[in-house]
Amino acid sequence: MIRINLLPLKEAQRAIGRRQQMALALLAFLVVALVMLVPYLWQSRRISRLDQGIADLRAALVKLDEQTHEIKDLERKRADLQAKLKVIDDLQQKRVGPSHILDDLSTAAPEKLWLVEFKDVNGLATLTGMALDNQTIATFMRQLQGSKYFYEVDLVETSQTEPVRSAGAASGPVFKKFIIKAHLDYLGTGGNPAARGAATGT
Image (cartoon, helix red, strand yellow):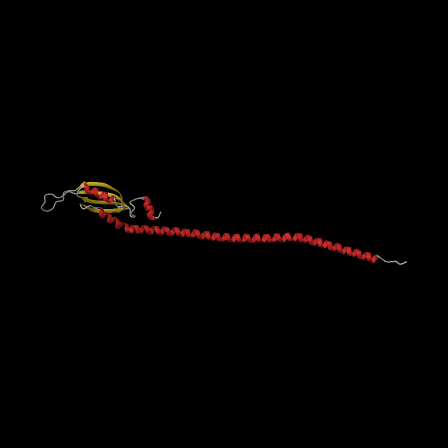
């Protein structure tokens, strides 16, 4: 009778079984590690993108702040420039205004009327003169009111002068002395606030 020793074969099968179990355990560990690692890497990448987006937004916000500051600075400079231009325009108007006022004053004065004094205090003119009669004074006031550089023309006082005596004459002519007040408009708008605002750009 032949006896076969099967012990080494069983040991080999057990060794193979243990190796298979170890391989399965290692495979399961790798699968678990991979399942845990993939979401972590994906989440890390997503967080990195979000961090980059936040950094980009902060940089854009800083740039916008700089642009806003520049815009405010430009608006302030533009306002300063407009104020300076308005002052220059006012000075220009006031520089040429008196010549127009004198021209209109000369044009409005009738032939039989003489101006003795002209005063201008803060845009309020006082005209003192003499005329041959009241009708001449009325004509002067009407023509002065028609000027776009005079408005609110008002007769303050009128009186009769003493006869002007000349050599060889018993008595001379009698004149009407008058005082007229009127407001001056150097911009030539006739005292119209709307027109004045349009002329000055306000």
